[in-house]
Length: 238
Image (cartoon, rainbow, N blue to C red):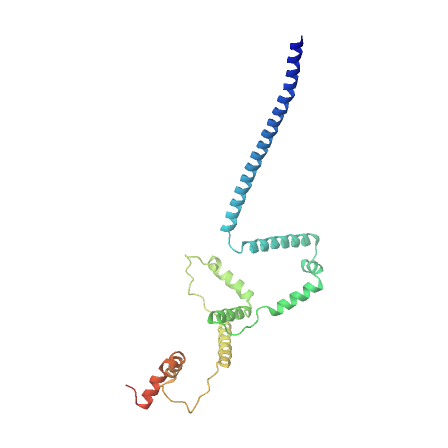
């Protein structure tokens, strides 16, 4: 009977030990599964971020600005539709949301818009002239509709249309073009400034074009050829 009691006591002591060990193993396995799940989740998120970054890199550099502009235009269209549905004037409703500071800032920006910075290059000057001329154009809608009716389907020509070179400008159109060209010539003549003529300067040219070339050559190579020129003038050149 005594040995049986000792065995029962030993078994009772081993059972709690095995239970603690299994609990620890289950806890470690659960922790391992959680780490495994987190690793897979992080891998998935990283892959998604790489894909999104690749998409962003393939987009144009000004895509964000374009996107913001398009969203603003869509919002403006929605507001216009809402105002039209209520029978309200959109411009007047829009002015109600503009503060005095914003209005003043926009006025200052409008005055600074397209300032004349002077001559910076022929391309910039030509583009500025193009903008100025296009702003002066006043379309004749009556004549436009008349030509549209006369031309029919050929009003918007295609590669198969045969109306190229058949348009004859009106006398008023020719007069406007001549007047505009004369204004440009007059304005250009004010910009051109004739250089002062020095009577005491040496005459080393045969015409105006040769004089300009000599001045340009002197400006770039004068310091290198000054001694040679002096020797030629004195007659001591070797």
